[in-house]
Length: 135
Image (cartoon, rainbow, N blue to C red; front, side, top):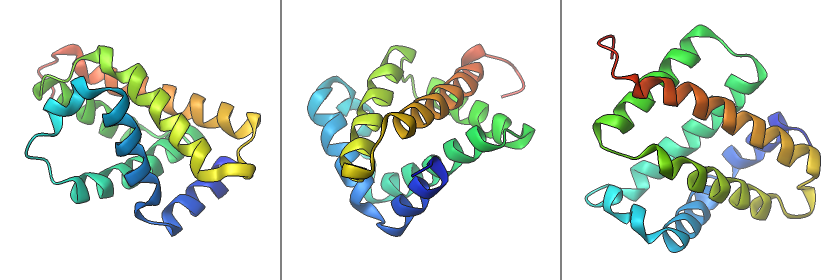
């Protein structure tokens, strides 16, 4: 399985990945719960599924528009006062979630591709934390 096939499976199963992710993330890192107060988790799940598609697309074929979108998203996180220090925990929980979701189809190659994809997207998002007047 490659990352493109992975994202197709994820999208075909709707909430499975996102529900699992939020269970894992919020359980392991209760300190992030404050950022979800008043957040509709059903809507957030849709955003996460879309974000997984953006991450995969950014990894497969980086484009200026996706990179800029990721910067804007990072800036939005900065405005919500989400500390950069939470990103590694998010990434680790997301990788764990993807591994659990894919089960026997999860391989070292697929894990590597997702890790690289998430790290690349995260790097672009962190550029949005610059405080630039453009955002």
